[in-house]
Amino acid sequence: MPPNDSQRLTRLLRLIHTLSQGVDGVSVQDIATREGLDEKTIRRDLVLLKNMGLPLEERRAKFGRKLWLIRPEVENGQFNIFEGLHSATETKKKERPSRSESVPTELEQMLYFSTTGTRDFSRRAHLISTILQSITQRQALQLTYRKPSESASLQYTIHPYSLAAWHGSLYVVARSVAAGAMRHFELDRIEGIEMLLEKYRIPRDFNVETYFQSTFGIFSPVGEQYRVEIEFSGPASEAVKKSCWHTTQKFHDQNDGTTVMHVILNDLQEVKSWVLSFGALARVLHPPELVAMVRQEVIQLLQTYS
Image (cartoon, rainbow, N blue to C red; front, side):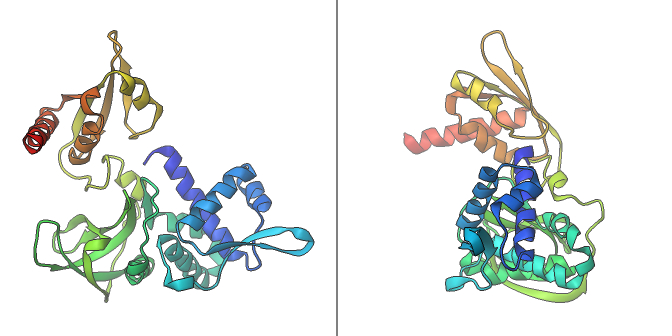
């Protein structure tokens, strides 16, 4: 996860926690003082949470003071991931009121953001609620799940570790009991869910951000490690250096004006799509496997448009 995304996620979780504790509301000024940030930044965060579906509203208190608070009831049955986090916050406060300050840190492990989207998960409210409850209580889940390549659904017993948001979709990051390994399950492909009595433990050294450091997206960070080199030319040469794409990225400017990006990954599927998004301005130099994948995709595109 890019550092800025990680920092903002942590801040958003603290913000939800703060709003959950403020019964009568909290002012932007108080939050800004607590976070050591300017009020414009805090207001942008509040607007983002509201646009994402968290039932926030700004009310005028005594002496004209404006306070932000979370409405006690969700209107029109709307529900999304931030509302689920608010509910999880309330649950943890009731379970361990004396340790309320640790709630944001604990909740941070329940959710991974690589990008922020605005997708409406209203129809999946019960799934999100059950998954968050499973993570909080460490109770196994049984999923009825249909893989993209399969016409029939199958049942999986899983131990959920976290939820991951990626390109507008939600994924359950979990250990599959049958496979004995970590797997990702897209929320929209879950056809049924049941909480089991079976208890499980999340390893103490598990960190969802560290877990995704060797990926370029949401694919499972398992398998061979690849040293990826991509050459960028033209406008892409300067543009690509302005953003943080991966924690291992390094750039090398060449005499001909091109820039070579170096990155270490454990999966090539999503970086392939990313390279193709630059068109002729990006060329894979290494590894050979990625070169072959891009070449095959280009050939199929030519056949499609021939």
